[in-house]
Length: 262
Image (cartoon, rainbow, N blue to C red; front, side, top):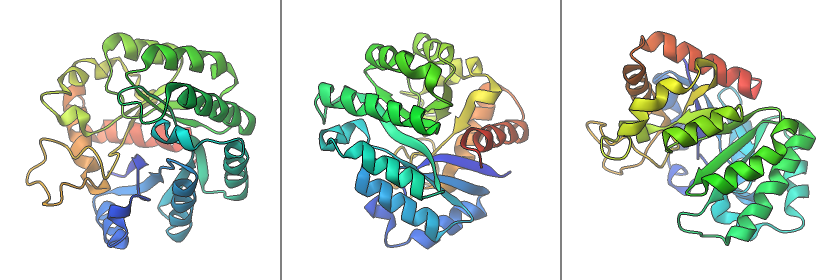
């Protein structure tokens, strides 16, 4: 199997000491293409630099996460536009969206950064990489306003309800599934509704270094998630779908390649 990890936070400081080993382990596990996620301007620049350092395997997104929306300024959009235009490795705008779970950034700041990044994605006709947590109604309302002008959009790390999933699919969103589905406490409902996602809109991700699959054995001492665990998540997804893992792997890989134009 060759897999695509659509969310790898490779710019995270926990990877700096052994980044080449992390990438080697991923490739040996069959994870041959990875999207390095940008969470703010500096993070996006780092993700791009990593993608250019390992061009055979890595690509990047450029964006400002809702947790960091407080850093959004009048110049942020122009900075992201420049990064996207100057670096061919940038394949999407984001990570952007809304997160009202802890409101690390004020909700008004999140909504401003979200709308301006959607505007930028529409202008550049790049896919948009989305995040939403406990902000479904606001998220859908804002996204609906821009959806007709966007090329492609994926809501990554989906953990919501069946009704929320149906609302996202009605907006023609792709859906990213993480190791959350491996958690028998919080992710059980995902195993019951994942079949609602059309095969050509399902993608997989680790969200490393976060969301280490709960049922992974043995667990690494560091509790750091890595892309090499993506096949483990793939197996859980195939089991929930009651379909052969080879077929689901091929479908999710082809969907990701087409979505990002790889």
